[in-house]
Image (cartoon, rainbow, N blue to C red; front, side, top):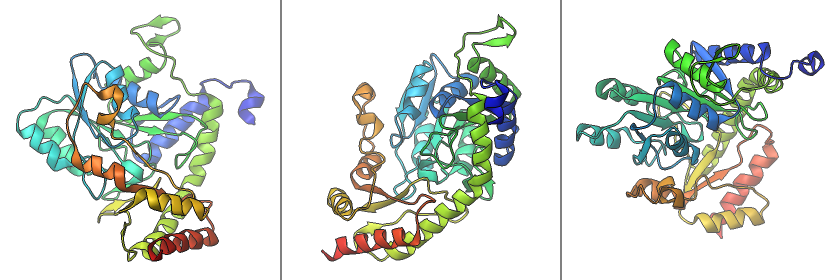
Length: 343
């Protein structure tokens, strides 16, 4: 209400405060707010200097924006298969490609469902093979790898504040980096390539966040620790109840990782049958993602086979885990899952 009453509803001091607060929370030097998580990805790639003639590798098991943005930046996109337990890009598969001499300018590592990718290995590979590492942390606000929050391992990182994410600004995104040069290119691209006033050093977009969105973000940041605690508590309850249910594999949390459970995703033998059963029982579910990116019509020209990702698209099912769940809701989910096995 202070922002609305002030009349300064477009980008301004509240955005800059939110940028600083979110960067500090994650442990990064610089935060740059954008209109959404997709524009954050596009902007970060431009900031990293990725464009025409460059080659980007990423996971085929993600929302399509992960691959679309390097294409829109002018780069060629290809894929690396995923780890079957974490659903994140497989560092061994990536290293095999790199050691065989494959040319790579950047890798986008997605922290899928709120579980960090193996950023330790990926950072080592980036340093050894000289490519840019970009973290797609759209689903992973506050997630940790070896005690450090994600968003600080890559040359840049991107977050989304879409309404379904672990925190929201209504719509919004954020680029984090410790590199002043990356930050300067990113800042210009967000604001029409502007250097000052009506001077424009490069071509850019209007990807600026509003003060209204940033004010929501600042309020949401105060609640994020509680949201995360509730998600982790709900996930722990579900895992405890479901780990011995036949035909159901709960999500993993490797030692040294801290999952923030944007989604609580199980792997099941009969996904479609279970989803129908849960729907009949009043339990909402989701499938993230039913088609791997390389099999989307927009990527017919890429081709390739990624069997681990392809298998995951047939078997994953996300159950409710959000902070508003009550104990009775969790009881109902567990009971419905148990009945599905008995039947």
